[in-house]
Image (cartoon, rainbow, N blue to C red):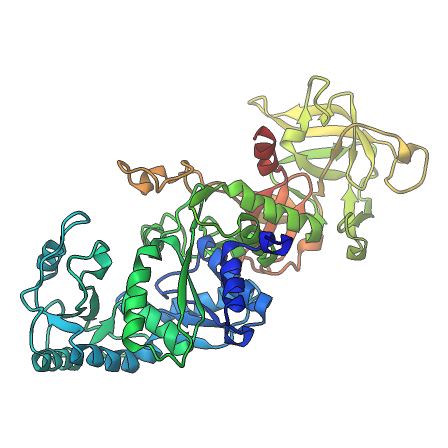
Length: 561
């Protein structure tokens, strides 16, 4: 095998083999086919990146097709959200399609199957059908309606379409093999009656096609060359091909279904049903809550399209499912934001610091780099004054030699500013420190070029000037679930692992350069972590979401391994 072939994932190898066997690149077409019954999540990101990535690799079109065959669960809101997320990730689809575009064609083909003796109307209850389906080790039994005449089937199916029957009274089933070892081949349902308005077709239809009937035929209509699904659809491949056999024209491209493994993320769930449950029970505040693994939630939390694409590329495409540690996702956003996020100063747990020998009423504007790793990012000015806020954790009256922050009788440097020395502190009636008094060395200003400015001290603290600081609401997020695999316990419901402390809301203070920050602007709060402006922000109140801390826990895990 060539080095190039070794570097391809197994899906790409399949495509390369097909090209060698006679496919032309002009015949390649891919699709991303979400059901609009919820928001896309991080699991979908792999499928999006795979399909659209193949489109880019082979200069082939990629359709965005909505599998909108269940009006009971699907809404236009979800269609809009999906389109927004795919575009935000940086991808453009060739054509926007809907399974509902093909309702008439699917119905016409279903009529053809009935006429060919390949489909029949079953009038059993769902419970009766489940019993006669059999088990994986025992064959099923035929429906008492399996051998209805073609004319009777056609009449009943037309009545289903026209709304003559109540929901649950009839279904259309494919007539395949009730003894098949693949239970999906035991006369699967093709249509059910649903008297529900559809978000696109309204009340035009009273019957709706099932996924297995719709999926492959939609691929065929669109002339998709490679239909890529997650691993749970592997048993469906035989049925996918059987349905194609009934309509296939040898002059056209025959879609090929292939499967790849779903990648699950630790400390979360990615089932749309379970995500909807979190929303409906107000565990989170909507599908775009920053604790949610939805793409909208990650975006609101401060994740970038680049980080999510890099994450998808890092975990790759595989044939076996596994649980990906959320720390790897955090590693990717940390890596990207470290390169692009402007540096600012914010204090989240403020302690007042007074520089006693600094002139009352004086203020200075100190020059600060926006991003030390990017010269083009330039500089900004930060106000400095007599009274500052520092973090409470950055001061102790007494501490050992390993504490390199501020303690009585010792010096630290204020970021971009002066060297200060702690002289005393003030406490409240409960013994809590409420103020620190310091002196500063006027000749030690950073960047001034004086001998004193080059003097080395072991600690550097971030700070904000009290007179100039902006008050901000800070939302600190933790794992949504306390267990790394909340979905993996047969004897417990995933809701039992919801973390009651997944959100902490505090008041912090940030430098005034953030006054005009816009929704989704991302920053590094120096020495703390990365933060993003939330959509709840307004000119009177800044709101920041913590994206991720500065510490790289993923690297530590790798070192242990």
